[in-house]
Length: 278
Image 1 (cartoon, rainbow, N blue to C red):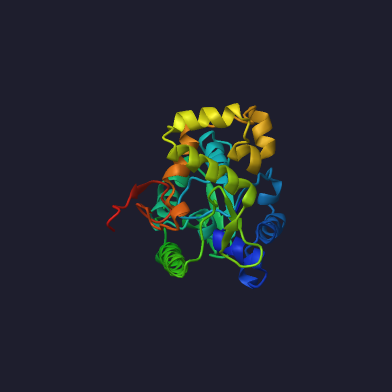
Image 2: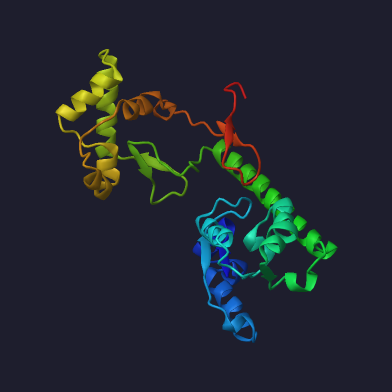
């Protein structure tokens, strides 16, 4: 069985005010599928393997749990795949159709989507029916609609000066009092100011990195992820790249840029840079 919690459902559950998110939780998906299996004389005899992705988009197949499942499929270890609904497996209309009409029939895999009342055994030898095709198309369109709304929300928040990015620049931290706001972290800010002062003296990134190392000034990783720094053995090893990133970050000038790159399509991991004039 394959389980997936979408990004929006995960956020809804964390916010604590959305029953649909709760109904789509990994636990509830597992419970529904197991009940179905236990009440089916044939399926109840199978060994049950679980694959899941928590907080992953269904618009692309590059998910850890999904990749593990597909690996088992390629090695001919899977006979039946059960999901709560087709959107758990994929929200890409074309890709979903390819698996249902070509890949799964070729591999001899039975595919069941409970809420969509779909069982490939009942559609053996025929292409996906119009109602199922329409349902997967709706999932695809829904994902694109969500993408547009999320982008619009981000743009609106950025226009209002809110900080909506994941990683906070070194020298700052997220405010605990005001949502989507950053405040100065004095411990880190002192290092940032020192780096800029060395740069103003005409020192290169390599020279600054060497000086920080010589003075045993802790790195960004050492401060923010001490356990990782200890494992890597890089407590004070500053890199030229880290120095350049700080010196070139216009956030320290009071500027915040959004939309420097765009995805080629919804769910795609590859992107392309947006010209500065845009």
